[in-house]
Image 1 (cartoon, helix red, strand yellow):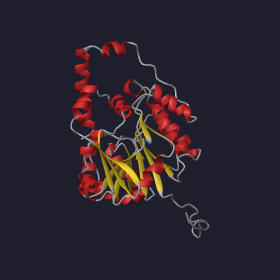
Image 2 (tube, one colour; image 1 turned 30 degrees about the vertical axis):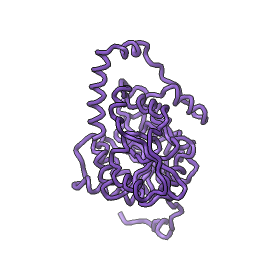
Image 3 (tube, rainbow, N blue to C red; image 1 turned 180 degrees about the vertical axis):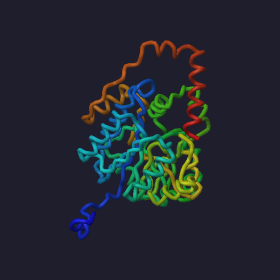
Image 4 (cartoon, one colour; image 1 turned 90 degrees about the vertical axis):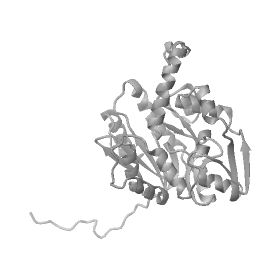
Length: 328
């Protein structure tokens, strides 16, 4: 059949210019039972905290990695309402690294603010991240939640900068105890395991051009220049695809460090980890900023079981196994 008429868009120009920053969220909710029973509300609060607490101009991109129909319907409704600018839906779970690569490729902004779907974003979070990127030299990654163990992980270039490039440096046990407790709660660590992991590690705060930042960065919530992260992922995916469901995130961090990029954390906590259920603290913070979040009641049997040393040992072994699998 011959073409009828001329496409009216041929002579028009775009009226859309991407923001400098693309905020990108990867979602995954295969079902709503067991581990994922409360995860829908966690994901919802992740997105709502971004929408409510981000003043800096941005485009919101969401990549769904093979979720159940309920999650897909929720994301589609946000897209239709104009709250999600770019929505990418995968029928299958393509693995975290493959999905991350496609997110970074598709993001239209020069700066990509990536987050997993279990992170609450506090007011001013994006501005604080961008201030570090725009002030410090050669920044590859900025995160908003400080983790002491990460000082000794993927930080060689940043440690050299602390010695030779920073205007001033503070060292010691500087991390607030509240942050340590929050990290242990959300990562399933016991006090004993945590203390073993951080033994001998000192916190380092560097100052450059009047701005301070922690020497430490991770990958489950990170703001990074697109020109930095995309080539690294291309190196890791030489065939364009990985057959691993999870893992290799630390390798990504190591490659960034090896290229000489600096990795920091905002001086003040600008995001909060939520895990797979909303606790009392997160519910209170959400309410403070006008967001609805119902605290999940913990079964009364859990505290009793948790006090049993035999059960503790089994749980700790399971946690150690899962942590190594998910973070290597």
